[in-house]
Length: 467
Image (cartoon, rainbow, N blue to C red):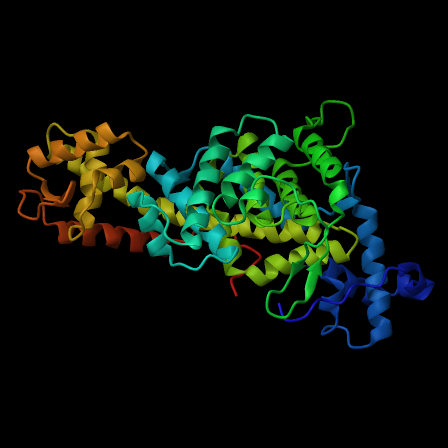
C-alpha cells in the first residue's frame, strides 16, 4: 500500500439539501455506489466535482445509517449493513459449510488426510502473509517429514500448524483471556523475544506501519485498555444469540461474528507481534465452534494472500468510516466464497482419487481402504521415497499403524523398502503386477481435467478477485 486512503468528511448534514434529496438521477447514482459499498476515497475517480462528491457521500451515509445493524460491544461503537453481496455470500456459506458436501450428486467422503492438508496450507499461507520467506513446497515438505525448523520462517509455519491443531481440539471451549494468550504463545514461540510470547503488550509504542516507508496505518488503543477490551470481547464471543422465536434480542450471524472477532484483535493489537495470526486463529475457532465444520478444510489465508492489499484496505476503510464493519465483512465474505470454490475443485479431484482407491481395493486382496489410499498416492508419485514418519503426518495415524501399513504393502509386493542410515525408505514397486502407474495416473488426471471443465451450477465467483 503506497499511500493512505483519504478519510471521509464527517459532517454529512452540511452536504444535504432538499434539492439533492429529491434529485432522482442523483438517487440512482447513490443507490449504485451503496450497492457496491464504495468508500469515500473510491469516489474520487467516479465523481470529479468535489462539491457533488460531498453531496453524494452525504446521501450515501444517510441511507447507510438508516440500515445499520448495531453491534453490542461496550468498548467500541461498531455497525454494519446487510448489503446484497454479504447476504448472497452468507447463503452459500450456510448451504455448503455446515452440511453434507455433494459433488455431481455424490456425497464426498472427507478423509482425515484432507484436514491435515488444509491445516498445512493455512499454516503456510498465514505465515507468508506475516512475512515468512519460503516456498509452499519446501514448507509442506518440512511439515510432512516432521523436520525440525531451521529458520524463523520455518518456525512460524510450524507454530501456525500447531495453533490450528490446538483450535480443533478446543473448539468446544468458551473464549477466554487464557485461550487467547495460549494461541498467541503457540503462534509466536521461538520467533520473537521470549518475554513477549503469550503476554499482552505493556507499552504504547506499537503501531501498524509500512516497514519500508514508515507510514502509520493504525495506532491501537492504549495498553491500559487491553484487559477490559479482551474481557468484553470474550463476553461478546460467548454470548448466546437469541433466535427469532425468542424475545426480540440481538442476533449476529456466526460467520459475521467470527469476522468481527478477527477485526477486534486487529484493531486492539494487544500483542507486540503475532496479532494477525492470532486474529485469524480466533476466527477459525469461532466458526468451528458454531458448527461450520467444513472450515477445517478451507485454508482462508491463501485467499487473503492473493489480495493482501485489499485485506489491508478493508481494515482502514472500516476504521476511517467510524468502524463501519461492512467493508471488512464484505471483503472476508468474498474470501470465504473464493476459498469454498477452491475447496469444491479440490474435492472434485479427490472424488477421482477415491474412485481410483476403490479400484485398487477391488483388484488387490487383503488390503484395507487406508492402505489402498497410501498405495494409490505412492503410485502417483512413483519416483519419490517416503518414510514412516511422512505417512504418519499425511494420514494422521500413529507410528505403529503407518509402519504396519507400509510393511504389509511391501510383503504383498507393491512397495519396495530400502535402508539408508538408520531410516527405512519406501517407494512404489514399478515391477509389481498392478496396472501401469503412469497410465492410471493419466486416467486420474483426465478425470480431474474433465470435472474442472464443468460449471459449478449455483456457485458465484467471489467479489474479491486476486490482484
